[in-house]
Image 1 (cartoon, one colour):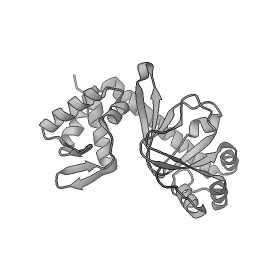
Image 2: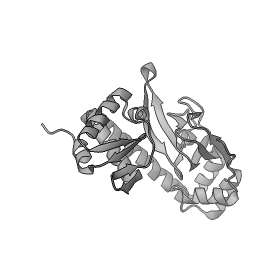
Image 3: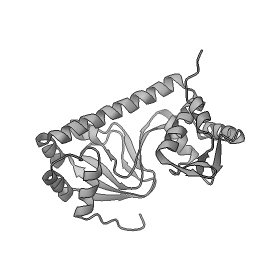
Length: 239
């Protein structure tokens, strides 16, 4: 990153307190965690960890964007999630002490708060609110994975891309005169990695929708002009 990020004690507490899993945790415990947390910065494209690495830390995104992904044969990659400001990740390997199940790469310049395994587990053992929120977070991860498996089983490329764009428009959309601008800047290669397909296939479908005025491609961003068409395209075909 071009500038050194300085997260003082108060900024660290606010970041942890604002995240879901630490929301109801005892203030003293949050203060202790904020006090021992480290700050790490990444430039876009820089790897944070890889599948198989030791899982000895939990991460909270202070700013930027982190791509969580798995690799397959012939160098193929599948993006499982995009972690944004306030999101916490890395909990699975942190809890069981085994190796990382995914890889993490900065999709934009990032600043991360890094919590070591020992202090986190100490708080976890003593605070039931943290344990409950962590269980809920793990359940959310499982539901998301089930949705991903369902998409691959029952939707073709057109349906999966439509569903992903519809989700991004809801989560990151900004209403403009020309439609809903997806504020998250993702390349066609990054979209393809979310779906486990080639960039060429994504490019072809995007231009097909652009020709039908469903969306507009504008300097690397997507403007959705017809949300209802995307929603219909995201539905499984009926026999």
